Length: 287
Image (cartoon, rainbow, N blue to C red; front, side):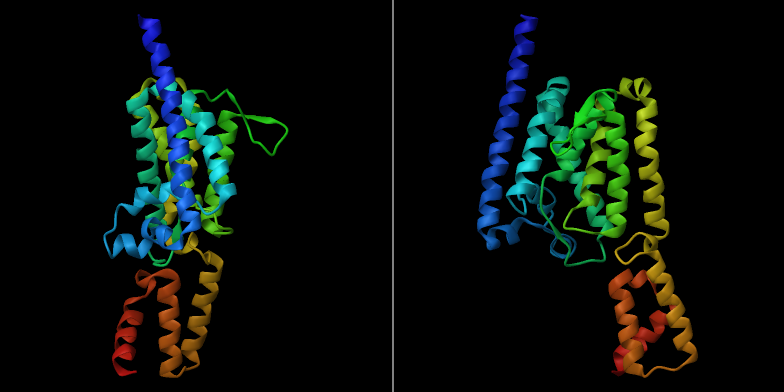
């Protein structure tokens, strides 16, 4: 009877994974074909923070930007989902999948909190969580990529994934949600450890290898956001130097207002000094 229950569970995981792939495929098809449909469910910062449309944290994971994006994500979900689901069981797999998606989206929302028009689609946060669940369960297993002729140990794949994602968040190159990837991946690893705490003892070295770079990045992101956001730290420093130089060479009030507004747009109002905030209030009321 026990063997029959295990076989039934495996069949259930395979069926759910297949249904997930088909469901996401159908909804993504409508999103690709209909811009208005996508606009209603896409991850968009202002719609979430200002209009309180929190459902977008999840609904965006059922949309994709194109067929390649959809195909790659569904391949990864099908390849890793069955293995992870077989170990965790259906209930825990659902918790892992949607927990990784929500936490990945929240991390992305924090990173882009000052970029109101930032938009994203894709199940990458959830799928990254599934992959990192696999990594922490079997760090010595081999992971291959469809476009490479060789395989990586899972722990090395995870480490490179974290580094590439951090670099991607900092540089913001290409139409890839590196922040959702990174947040979802770390969430998936932590949720798996919460389900099976013994994994932290068994694979503590892999956990530290993947978690420490993320923690360092997160501390920098919180304490020095100008170092991590879109335009980069050194450009920010050049702008500061430019500001100091221009303070010695007076600008017109219109030029000064434009400069302060541009700085708020790029780095957020929290990066203005008290003097700059007072000056912005004065100029806004006068011009």
